[in-house]
Amino acid sequence: MTTTVRLPLRVEEALAAYCVSTRRSKSEVIIESLERFFSEEKAGKAAQTPYELAVSAGFIGALELDENAASESRTRVRAKIAQKHNIPPANS
Image (cartoon, rainbow, N blue to C red):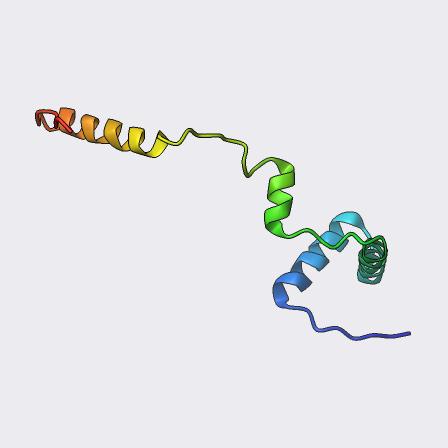
């Protein structure tokens, strides 16, 4: 069965580059991708969002800061600026 799909240029270029680097046809790559998509859907595994992928990879939530981190940073920056410009430190 033949199916025609219009791809955005960026997707077409990425597909073409992938096919060249793996020495596979576009049809092979598209069929494999669709089969993987449908098997995940059947298994009840919906595709992860970019946020979920970042969390599972450890990019989000990898750094724990205490509650006062922002105010401490602000205080240190103000002190450095005051030091640089010879301004007496504020007593706040």
